[in-house]
Length: 250
Ligand code: ZN
Image 1: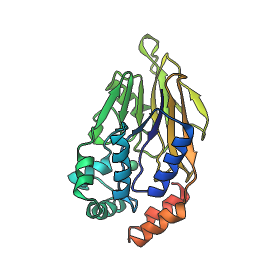
Image 2 (image 1 turned 135 degrees about the vertical axis):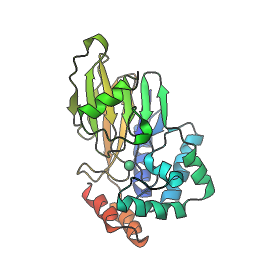
Image 3 (image 1 turned 90 degrees about the vertical axis):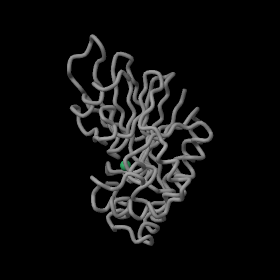
């Protein structure tokens, strides 16, 4: 089965549409969204409508911390994130709010876990930045392969599984559009980069292509109309940092 994994859309409709076009061209069996549909960007309502339409057609969607903050409030958020969230709350209709509030926090599918931040205490919204973070997540799940987002920086953490486990965790930095083979004797934590606000220095939108038959994963990158998305953020009066970082990709 070929799965398209998308995450951290953050109200960026231009990036979302470009990624969905790329996914359609690639041809997949299903789409999985790891959350943060809203927050930061200028089209939260439209992005929720697109994703809820995909869910109606069978897509899986997980709740992110920004989706959660629509109902739960902005405590723990940075100043620009909190400002954007206050604005976002005013943009969403009741159908969109209900959709976000009802999203699951995690979903298991065989030996694969889908979650926004991490398997360990998922609503603490931990950032998977280094091997010790990945280790804490693995300790909280039986899943061989965990998919998450949240950091907006593509990464693949891996370790030997079961009796082969040595305590050593390796970090792999994926190159754009390059298929990475996943070995059956290893456990993985795959951080998929952001659709709508990349932070790895590459401003192109990111999505993950997971082929469970071939056991491969690729971090695909898609150029999109960054100027259009940035202009909408400016026009909405949101903090300058939010459109500037789209252009820098960090
Ligand atoms: Zn995010």
